[in-house]
Amino acid sequence: MSDDTPVTLDSHRGLKAQKAVDLRRLQADVEANEQNLRDRHEELQAHLLASPAQTWEEAAEKARYLITLFAGPVDMQDPRRHKMIAAVFEDFERLSKPGS
Image (tube, rainbow, N blue to C red; front, side, top):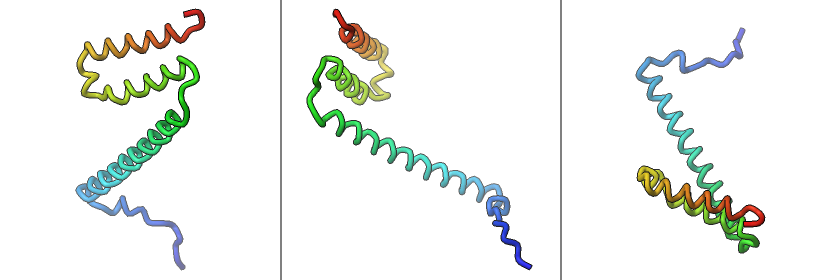
């Protein structure tokens, strides 16, 4: 009589081998997530380039995206740049409201 229950190989590995497997799985997940993020960035950029902005709000959204893109994590460590970027985003919000 045969048992069709799958064997969980993880339970048969030693600690060192299991850690190696876990690291490989984690690395594969990270790489897949990074590829997904790159694909989504390309899709967003294609959308932003598809046509010129029709309103100041659309132009501000494009500028907000570029500022965020180019102000990567290294630049955000500088508190002055962080404050300047926050101030520009506040300006976008304030100037985008009707009657401004």
